[in-house]
Image 1 (cartoon, helix red, strand yellow):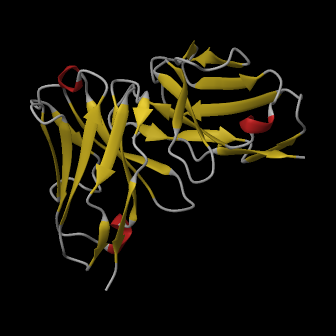
Image 2 (image 1 turned 30 degrees about the horizontal axis):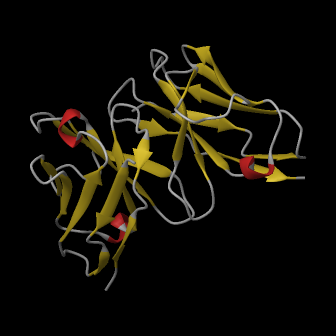
Length: 115
Length: 107
């Protein structure tokens, strides 16, 4: 069974940092593109980052470019999102998603940026 | 970035009725258009990818169509579990983007 489990969310002050993790199981993690998507509670979805199977191609949406860093460790079947210089507007539930189509998603981890 | 406009914002229907959801893109997305369903408190679930391909395990009552900039998700006969929010999403041009969603509610 394909599983994606996010962790690392929490409450952080503006300007602070967090690192999210997404542990994958039940499939060949190293063969898939992976993605981060976020959703402000009660609002729509924003696709914020993607990374190819070997980590050599990474893209970001403009709103997080230069502040967030996506990486992966294929030996540990884990995707990461390092979030720096956090802002109020980064408050959201963060999901990881698998593959070109986003065919499997984790349950999400909530991030709250507030003083 | 590509703007996806979904209509209507809310669709009020009864179980057994047909639902037709629309998604219009601000430019061509080369048919790289997907539909996701999100039930309350849950992660999105992929229903349709590349305009008309059903994802694994998706019932046949869900179908997608369209081309260029105009796309449609049809649910042929609504089941109780189909009342949820539906999002279209494009992966033709980075950054990938979602529409604002259509809520299908019980009439």
